[in-house]
Image 1 (cartoon, one colour):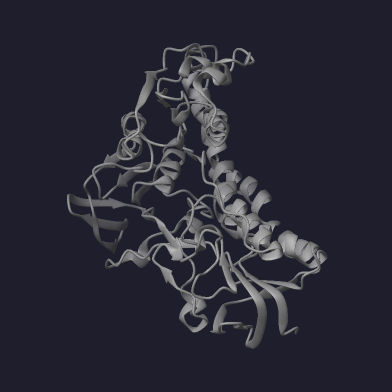
Image 2 (cartoon, rainbow, N blue to C red; image 1 turned 120 degrees about the vertical axis):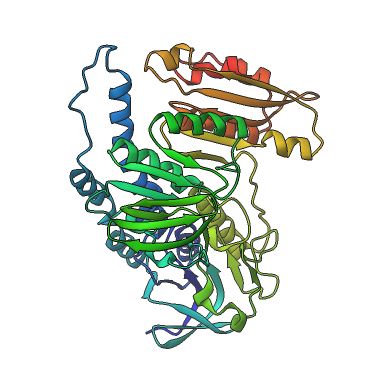
Length: 445
């Protein structure tokens, strides 16, 4: 086993791959190590398999909305085992394909836990490995809740591998995972409850649009209880009992949906002189550890940008550039778009009203309920709205928030505008394809 490399990368997901491949292509000796299946969260147990399942629920929801408008959908339903087999056609090949891709590129592959045993060394597979540099891109895992019975909760990985969907589900938490899996499960026939400890779920998104989504979710049969902090979980004959600050709830199963934390505890960072917080490895403007300059971090493992797959890949490229050419590139997070793949989806980029006000910016707000617009009416979508923030002095787009069919695609136009400092007038200028969600842009600014 080789015991010295130019670079050791911990993790094999988006961030890790974006570091490892460019450095190897430049002639560096590179190793990767992962204590989980190769490929990272997104491809194996995150956004990719989730979107496959949500896609089926979206098709079902669309057909049901159109019932009585030219479609007859009384027998349309989700076959959960069949859908899971389809999902596995995407996920099953990932670990082997990812590992083979690394090996084909001449990257050494390790399996297991990596632990620092010095500033320039790690213990991997029982042996000592040294390196000029380390890149930590180990991803995230469900955050410990510190409550009795939390081991009874399914984590998102397990939910995405369920052979049968339980007849009833409780989601403990009110973020992405809760709303995405709740909408999927409800369309698949389960009785669904969301328990959120605060007064407002999906806190990173626009409050008004979240309110509309919450109301629509309840209309879809999803129970949502706010100000309901989970206190303990117990096993009962029929499944689980969840005790909260506002009452007791029972279901066949309960799912952890209360956030994730960096997957870095196993690294023994202190032994490597690497400082970290609960938010991840502490990094400077070049994504380098100030306490151990040999170490860089990217993605969910770093206390840096938003915990999103595109951000992880982007940060990996920044780290690779700085490793190979010296610290000269800083990440730019302007216009990062994110989407909750509920039904309908909720998308956001740039500043929220609260953030813009906190920064003392002078801006105008364009907002409307768009359920009566042609693009919503033609698919019988009753939950649709937007909000766009425009700076008064310059006309620049500061933030955009969209709820409704196609939001996950249309938000990318606004991400482009914010990243490049485009104005409302410049977004009105193109002749967009019509009829399309994109063509609505000119009316939103």
